[in-house]
Length: 74
Image (tube, rainbow, N blue to C red; front, side):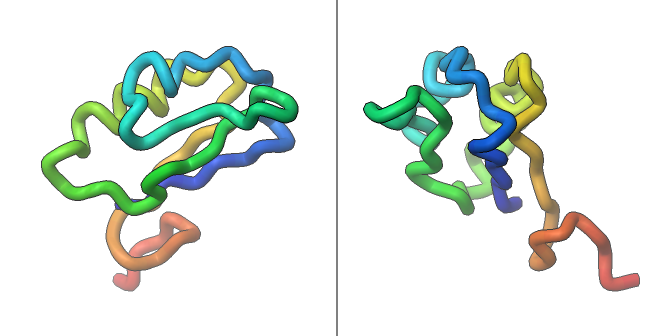
């Protein structure tokens, strides 16, 4: 699982940081999302999915597997 963050779409609400501060942070400059761990361990998958769902601007998404574009190889 790879996290994709669109800082241009981020509104700096900080919901991701509140949900999972080990993976997400906010820029001191403008408050937009900063990925501390863009490829977190599988053991955190549920918490990561929850944090992505909580993003009010839709700036966060997930790519499953090895491909960053979210497409499968099949």
